[in-house]
Image 1 (cartoon, rainbow, N blue to C red):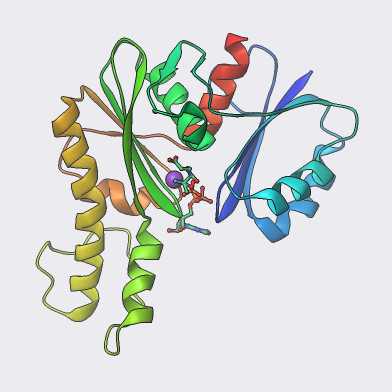
Image 2 (image 1 turned 45 degrees about the vertical axis):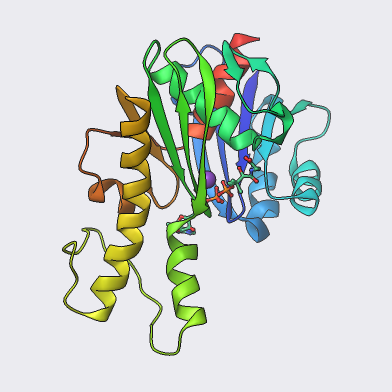
Length: 243
Ligand SMILES: Nc1ncnc2c1ncn2[C@@H]1O[C@H](COP(=O)(O)OP(=O)(O)O)[C@@H](O)[C@H]1O
Ligand SMILES: CC(C)(COP(=O)(O)O)[C@@H](O)C(=O)NCCC(=O)O
Ligand SMILES: [K+]
């Protein structure tokens, strides 16, 4: 009766196994792999008692096909999609289906973790998305910006003098006194600045930060926030429980 949750992003595939009735985010097992590593993970899924899977995929048709091949045979599979309303969340996108299904799921997860609050949820992956959810359960809209690695990589590959940088565990001073720190500060300030601007514009009472780059971006934030591992998987779990 195990539920398999999958969040396929443009860089990595995150997955978790949830037992029936498990609390949100309390997984039996979880992991993250780059797209090429999926087959090995799929072999492990075959002996895990999985009866149902919910998959959020924003990484395109080839990745969808790879996931379909890796899933255990004969289970009930839902390809999660952005719709007008799900799990008590109303989708305010002009065309609800245009919203990335990972963003819709992250918003469902954020609402489940902060019910009745005006929430900003930032998912810091290949792209960074910063989305606003109202206290009465409406996905208002959001921002899409290049993720931290993309931003830093764009500078390195489009300039003659700027190196590829790697952010460290702690953010550098806001005003870097060397090229490396100036680039890291610039990229972190853009990411953290977008999140802080969104919180101010929304009058947010809760700010949730997730995604592979969250450990670098969250320490640069100057406002109260909560780092949540895999908010997209939390949202899929909440959506499954609301059916
Ligand atoms: N071990 C890692 N492998 C890949 N990306 C990582 C890793 N650790 C941190 N990152 C950062 O996380 C981002 C990927 O995060 P993730 O949430 O998996 O993205 P996506 O959902 O777009 O696949 C990368 O762009 C990079 O900034
Ligand atoms: C914005 C995204 C690329 C984020 O993808 P990710 O960084 O998680 O790989 C994805 O949510 C997407 O393709 N969205 C569709 C467009 C939209 O949400 O408006
Ligand atoms: K993202």
